[in-house]
Image (cartoon, rainbow over all chains, first blue to last red; front, side):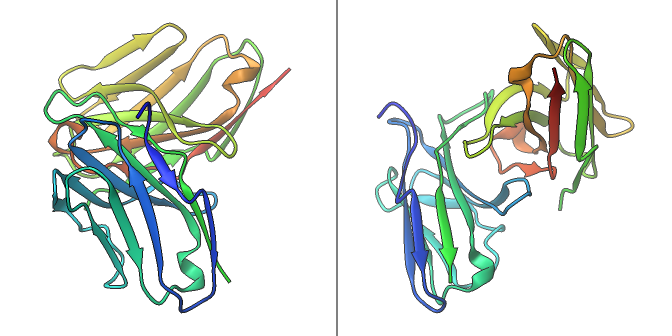
Length: 115
Length: 113
C-alpha cells in the first residue's frame, strides 16, 4: 500500500475486555514498530519486529500486552484485561531493512479508549 | 535505558523570528537523533535527523546541531511561519536508528502572527 495502515482508527472498550489492533506496513518493509502515545506525551516505544521475529520487546509494559507478525507483514497488537490506563493512541511505523536508517513512516494510529 | 529531556514544553515566537528547541540524552551509545513534527490529531512526521558522525545538518529553514560531548542536540527554525505551529518531538536511538526511538515529551511551538 501507499502508507502504513492501522485499523480500527478508534476503539472504545470496557475495562477488562480484550482488544486487537492491526497494522499493515508499507509493502516490502521488513521492520515494524509499535509505539503508544498518551495525551500530551511523546510516543513510547513498545516493540519492534524484523521480519516475523520480535527483535526488541523491552517496551511492552507488562504481560497483558503481546504482539505478533506471523508472516512478516501485517502485525497485531493484543491487549488483555484492558485497564483505563491503557487509553492512548497506538502508533505503528515501518521501515525498509538495513542501514543507513532514514527514518520511518508512522500510521495514523488507533485511538484506544478504555471506559 | 535512554532518557531524553526536552525544553521548553511551550515556545511562543513572533512570525518571522527564530525558534530553538533543546534536548539532552543520557546514553552515550546513542547515535541517531531525529526530530518529528506533529500537528493536532495527526501522525508524527520526520522533519530532519542527524547522526553522531556530524555536528550540524541543515535543510532550508530547519537545522539541527549535535554536541556529543555534552550529549545535547537542538532544533533551529528560522523565519518562522504560521504553518510551523505544531508539537515538535526530539528522539534518540542506538543502532543507527533501526532500534526503537526514545522520545522527548515534546515542545508546543506557537507562531504569533
